[in-house]
Image 1 (cartoon, rainbow, N blue to C red):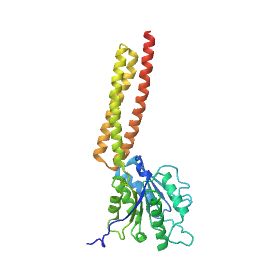
Image 2: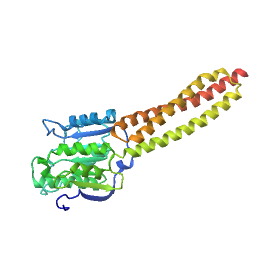
Image 3: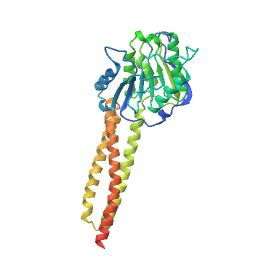
Image 4: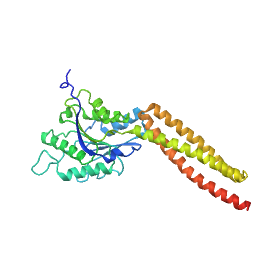
Length: 319
């Protein structure tokens, strides 16, 4: 078996970084299927939703299907918001005047702007049913120039894949990305024995994919910081309550403090469980855990203000 029999993914790297990849990932993972529903029997959107159900991803994955509005505004009619993965379906790419193998500059600008406003981390470009070599060249040219302009990494499927069930590849790629595989690994695993190999256009940098492990590690750090802040507040609370002669006005605050400590322990245990699993089913739990920690942080700020107010009230009563 030779590389000619099973060639590796074709990879081109630009020298331009992608700002969206430098940001901390967010949950839930959101996928936009943009363009005609070419799979009339099993449309890709419902297939991805079914995949999320099979993986137990729950609220950790949201799928939105939208028609390609216009090439001048690809997201026209699509709900505003973040889309981590954009799958561009089979709408033909228009050519430039007298330059049939290159996308016009305005199209590159509009597509780059659409991906930037969506904070997209990867986009996948499927073949056009026109089966035109010139149109296929325009698709590659569009993706290549968007990446070079600072866009997210792109995966361009060969035109020959129209006969090789592109939707199955797209579904498999999303599944591997949900398992937090690096983009190159996800593409190679999803490609299997299809020929010719897809084209991976990547920006400068190493963080390619959903990068959910990075979000998990950030959350673990935030939990430890909140535990430290809780211990500090407990010492401040005890010192203030002792100075007031253990006044009963502090009891309600003490109960809230104890409850917050117990809740923080639960958040930490939940995070460790997610860290052990590191699977799609954990991303929904991770999103809930992050939201719970945010609420506990807000409660701490409220408790600090309540401690100061209670101490002042007790002092005034004592005077």
